[in-house]
Length: 373
Image 1 (cartoon, rainbow, N blue to C red):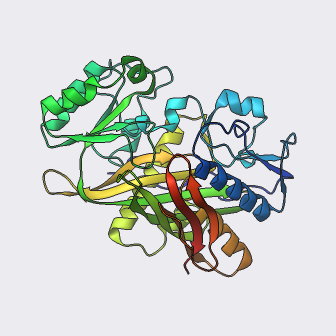
Image 2: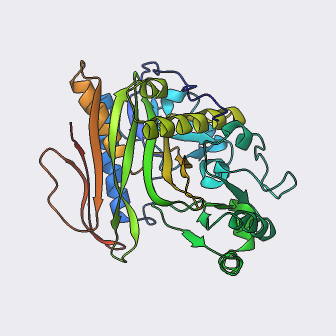
């Protein structure tokens, strides 16, 4: 019962503008963040510039493709001179929370605490495209939501801003719920919110996305791989993508298995619903994590976990696909992968290396993208 249409609501192909430079707003201060992220970003910008046959440098008025590291707010986009879809690879949002997991679920009740600009319509527009869950902006609402969900099984509590699968805990009873929420800061809860949703087991996480660059659009489905970091945590290890020319409607028309077709439909419904609920959204890189697994009642469930409206972990594979389709005009679809391994290894022949070395914060690491077929 998907309420919003799964058809891509944005133009299938962006016009070819006079883009002369690729710029990365917010990259001037590199004192924060991981070295591997900064270096990977430099390689990504180089590949994008090469794809468009332009340079990298300071913004040129009305002729710059901005590639921010995160979705940016409307006011920031205005300051950067972003007025058109073809001037950004990523997303412009009306408020910071709109780019986080917070919007994946609705509030517990109409009078629940929420930030200004919160859309009460989004949850209804999504239908069952996401799992059963709630977003809360106060400890009291979070406790009440968690207790309601616990009546049907374990509950996953998620930091709305965490990445790479971190910032999550599963609770099985009221005491564990109260203990987990006692660790949350009231001010952070009010500002960012927290997500509580049903926990699935035997899970597979799919990636469904669509990316627009001037005069070209691709869409894909894929699976995410997990690896262990140097602390023994299970974290994001890369993505394997099946990529086609065109938008989500083209992808939906492919011969897909029932599970993949459902994942694509859920992502499309979420995508459409978000843009209806927040009309000021401007999105050219849209990626959705979609989970398949077993709920506490033993039923198989598929639903969107979160959105990513910025260049991210799968972007290396996305650009590899753009490059392959550019070089082979008659090719309809390609398979590309990104790989992240917490060790120094030799990538396969033909791979684009995004990072290989020792990151002072995370230790030895190798990141690369490669075309598989």
